[in-house]
Length: 106
Image (cartoon, rainbow, N blue to C red; front, side, top):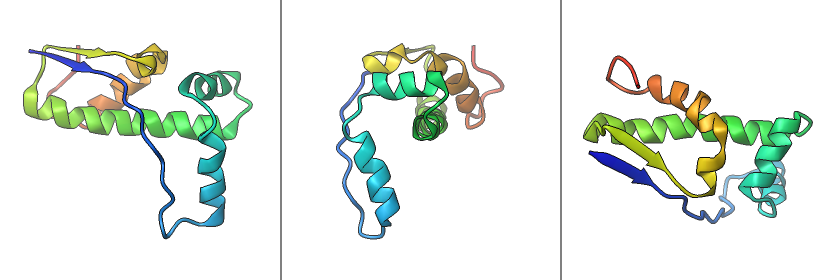
């Protein structure tokens, strides 16, 4: 089985319980694309970029583990702009290993 994941656009909405600081934080990122956020992370000078990339890796592993645990695919293909983020193939893979039932990921 081959699983293909393609990038999708997500629209962020304010939640009723969000603090003004959280709304400001998300508002700052609404104007940046994934390349700009990743570049800020690589430079190591943008704390918000670091938090965003760490969250992405954490939730990438959790979300993909659901698919792996149910379908047990032989190959996973990641496409779109997000597929250009090298950390998904190292740290994202390590995050996935924390949530799957299998002994290891090849």
